[in-house]
Amino acid sequence: MTIEHFPIQVTQAQCGHSCSHPQADLTAYLLDPMAETKERLRPAVVICPGGGYNHVSQREDQPVAMEYLAMGCQVFVLHYSVAPDRFPRALMELALAVDLIRSRSEDWHVDPKRILVSGFSAGGHLACSLGVFWNRGFLYGPLGKGPEEIRPDGLILCYPVITSGKYAHRGSVETLLGPEQLADPEMVELFSLEKQVGPHVPPVFLWHTWTDQSVPVENSLLLAGALREHGVSLEMHLYPRGIHGLSLATHEVEGQDGRYYEPSCQGWIRLAKAWIDAL
Image (cartoon, rainbow, N blue to C red; front, side, top):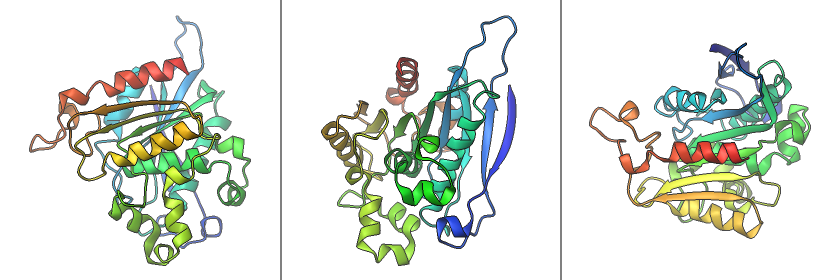
């Protein structure tokens, strides 16, 4: 395995806001080809950890990357810009990460038609944002890219933040948009991804827990309804219990007080593998 780091740079001119972070970091975990096996192209998974757009969670970072790596994927973790940086800087960074992977797909033995984005909580909002906005000029235009270059081929959304409405995770909305954009009803509406869904959205794997008190399950239900309405392929799993932020829900990622360990939710990663294999 090879581990490499790649800077992802979005300028103030591109995103329309001043930049407090010099650049994002894309960490690549790349499986080396083996001479004794048939050479094949692998799916790529870009992980967007959560953190309410305030920080990037370590629990949804390397532990998750190792699981996808064990599935035979080439794995990338995006340490995207967070507060005080605002929308759409992190989204542009994710778009450039997908473009970089697609442009280097031959070198990295990646199937350029199977580049997936896996997001958790606010990172799920970021991943889903690329899924709904990849064909919008406000995103690809300033980056100097074509829409197909930044398009994800699938989304794996884990207890995602989706809406700015009744069931919003208000902290994520306020942190991503900031006071100026919060005062603009159109920007607040843009945050609600269930209202941005169309047939252009790639296939989605989605899971949530029924008892999530931080990001209510209605976020996923609203998204599922919109995907259904527009004929977008969806595999969805609702688990009866579990707090927000479970990550893998294993001992590897449990907190010092035992939180985040939930055996009933640990199967999601195996289900995601089957979903990836079927794409």
